Length: 336
Image (cartoon, rainbow, N blue to C red):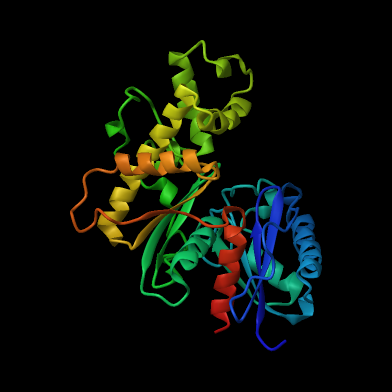
């Protein structure tokens, strides 16, 4: 080929998403291109799925995998900067063979190609940044991706701040002054990581299931969701009901938006970024609800200095494909 070709692979719990990026910075797949992940079955099965799906995706993009010069890979963490999964267990990698597994090296061995690794939050944040500012820029951005947990990343000068050990951008575990949020007096927001009052403990689907929905239902026992025997199933209905105007469910998302506002205020005072970016399920909604949510984030931020008050809050573009696109961008950058 006349220009380099790289692949972006976003490995999730149940699906792998692919894209291809050429040296002219053109993505060759629009929208989702997914293949089953089967990560619960361990590395051997899952890595086979990654390679099989890569071939299928190459056919969809009308390219040959023989033309690839590098791969960008992202997964949920915790993992090191080089893609070694935590020995204490990582999100979506419950099979014991994943403990301490070097997934970057595993994919490199299976494909025979150099592989660059990012965690999924950093990869999505990189795409969110590049979509706004391009690759070559001095701009800085902070992204928060609201999903089952809370991922994200900090991008400065077009590059991910990964940190010394790769745990930079673990934004979900930044503590916020949550007890300043009105209407949740007496709540006990505990995170899976063991902290109380970090961003993920209030702003994630897990937070809705574990903390927010039970707390609100105790105060609204006649709400329709109180009749749902499975709290996990009920939690998944909250966003849709909030979008349709349900008062209690709107309150849950107001709390999440104000938690984000407090967090973004901290980031503004640390990085003075050019943009704040939100992604994930909270904003993968209709325009009216998305605009309301962004307005509530702004309302949740303490008063800013006059010079900082105009920092824009953007919704990440192409949210379902953000991880794969960010991973591909990192791979293309790595080859020069």
